[in-house]
Image (cartoon, rainbow, N blue to C red; front, side, top):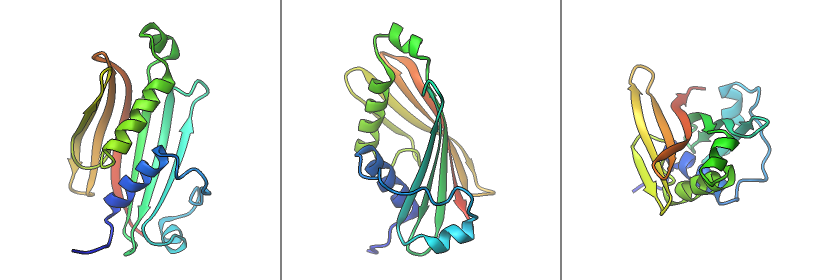
Amino acid sequence: MSDQLTPQDVLSKGLQRTFEGKNLERPLIFATQDATTLMSSLGSDHYEDMFIGTFDNTKTIGLDVAVTSTKVMLGRTYNGGTISVEELSKLGIDKKSVNSFLGQTIVAKPWTRLNEDVKYKNELFFYEYKVTKRHPLINAISGEETIFYNDQPVALHIVTISPIEG
């Protein structure tokens, strides 16, 4: 068995470490770099992410990039967010509780947002990630990540995973 991590392993471990609070002190280094420059500047089994939120912090855009020791790169984007603060309040919850549950889910199921369906729940929340389309022509995957509170959808992300060639 090989000790080399796959790009999916690197994405999973990086995302899990972010929600565990272990990836918080690192520079964003790839904002304007092309894939070749990025590949040569990163070490092996490396993970970078970038997060953009709106003023009310209910809508988000994110990008994760993984590089393995063999310089295979994989990118993952996610777009979406929660329902409005007012709608959350009517349900008796807030964005912090939704994000907290998302963090619990990712720590418990770090392989989510990849190439398989994933479900997770606690007493109030239910998480579901579904692969919605496989794009064999470009080896990409699209998926939807939804969080429900008492059977009502309160958050949604559209996820795309694709190899990045250098």
